[in-house]
Image 1 (cartoon, helix red, strand yellow):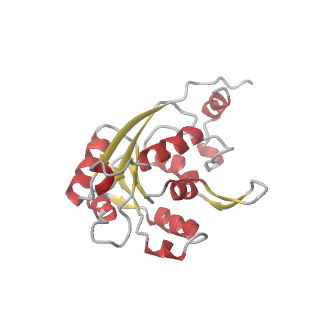
Image 2 (cartoon, helix red, strand yellow):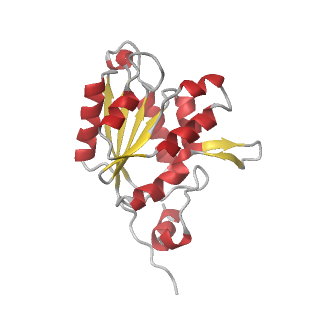
Length: 207
């Protein structure tokens, strides 16, 4: 029996770049473009972006996250403000709006970054669930964003360390969000066989 292809659901993704200087126009923000570039390559679904560039102010970060979640973003990614400096308060702002904490995301991001710099242990990235939405704190550098999302590959293109995004689609499934299909050449999402929607996966091959 042939499986009929279905339209891929639209996914609304919230992106927040946290930086005093970029938000003040001292330099051009690189976080939002880096996030959008990687996600466009990795996700087959049509995407609606909701973006914000804000300073390192805890109350402002928390309010922005809540606003994005109120606008029905099942996935929100932040970049910047996760170090140990006094103005790095993105994790605190994220935890303040959380229903549940997902520490494995931060653990894996640090593991990936440790392959490049010993100061990765200073990073305080985390992830939380609020309602039916997943919020993940990412590092601030474009190169580090791509590495933590996509993981590490050897010279033959084989994955050596899994990136965190491989677990994101199934997590979004479990909390009641839309079905996200990834392009395996960029990021092969993992789902148990019983959770795979064959019709949507087939539709993605036609995109």
